[in-house]
Length: 403
Image (cartoon, rainbow, N blue to C red; front, side, top):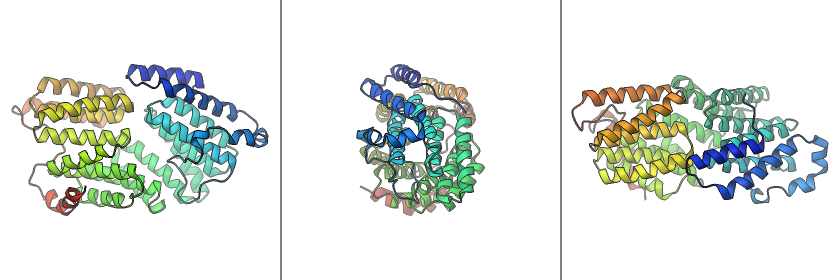
């Protein structure tokens, strides 16, 4: 398990990283440094002192009062204990750091919450540990993330807490998925789905994961089933709904319904989702534009893609979307730009050991070398006439009707 940096070291690292990718975070970094320092200082204080200083502690992080982090216990109400509420405030602040790509500050903050919660009930510590695993995963430290998720699963199974164990299963599935072990990811997502509260956060993430795997395996009818299930369960959650719509549009793209897919991605853009969902939508939209030979649209989307890559600081998503952009450039006849863009994707895949993306980049280059000019490269987008089209046509009609 990696050790967290001190708050000042984390601040310096994230500030340097933000500057290198052109992200302007000066007005946010100093408040986040103060939050990380507060969490770190409290984590070394005796428990009895924390209880004695509750009046002061309750005044901390007023801007996060009443806000809950995304990782919560789906089978339990919001905490009423002042310390448990404080843990959630710190983790909510860490989520803002994550969204800005400031992972060192987030890791330092959540590590402090783990130390704070070690004498609390198992649930508070398990949630903080799952959160720490998520931050580590985004930092490409998969070994540390896996240790976090395994720790959560072991403890929650001992406590016979299925809904909270589901959070750990989802994390483990994500690691397997990112390492290219889709059978193991499928098994763990299914395990999470069986353990989760219907409609809760872990249930949603399991549905998202199963839909993504179904898309990867070209089981388009299954992907649509999980996608609409997710969409219908997210009426009150705009971010989840945007993610479901983005994935449904990806399925339409895979089945050869390029125009309906393009329209779906445009709707996602209008919902202004998080960077993660925006990356999915941008990657799908540029592929649809390439297939429709809309050169000007490919160029516009390329600008948005490069901006989102810099803002999101997500190397795994960046490698994938750069491959999609390379494919689009090839389809509109800009072969040199396609090659250089694919080279950037390969560099990320090699650096962070995204083996599946390395194999896919190799396959694309072989296809480009062998195919006549402007013919589609190796792609998971299907030709217009396939059996997949018939199986998803009713769902495509619903997608087209959305406004």
